[in-house]
Length: 288
Image (cartoon, rainbow, N blue to C red):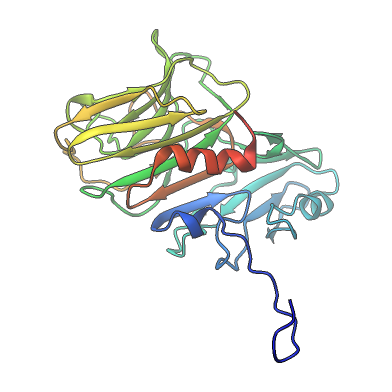
């Protein structure tokens, strides 16, 4: 389009996930989530030589996989830092090499979740995001592919996010996990009396788009791969341990195991329409 001053008006950038659904507390992804975000996506560790390098996004707003594979040059690759795109600087920084999630084998980046880049988390490792969500309305969107349970404890429930202290009843305002028990499924807890909404099937082989919200009172809702039949009703949060929110794990107990095939986690401090959030995420990952 030609403006009256003779300049070409550039086309406006299409809204990305966080442009449409605002108020994110923390946001991590293998894609760019906001037009205002100008930082990197992740720091990659190369086993050969033990060097690291930051990588951002390509012209399509997707993780620079070509650049990573060129950097690795046939070596295995791991993630040492996953940058927070929310603007709150809550980067996931992994201190120990032994806990780095694996991103690539022999120089090739793993692809799950609709053929998008993903990484494999280390069992029994969690990261403290450094903030609490008690009393706040919350939406969580999580994308995973399959679960990893330790051979000696095949029925554990890998955590995705939570602030469970690992003792007594699950008293958390937000906990999402993959329940490995006899009535397995993806669960979202909401505080008092272990109220949860739960979806069928222990494992979704093709990946899962999970979106859910919790509230102080009323019905909590979850969406898994477009299935919105799960819900639960709460009369208030039951937190007795005022601890920070964790990703990939909780603060102890027998359910502290990892999920694998991770590509994206977003946590909002306000509720958004979870069906719409789920569909918006799926539009990129094409899982259901």
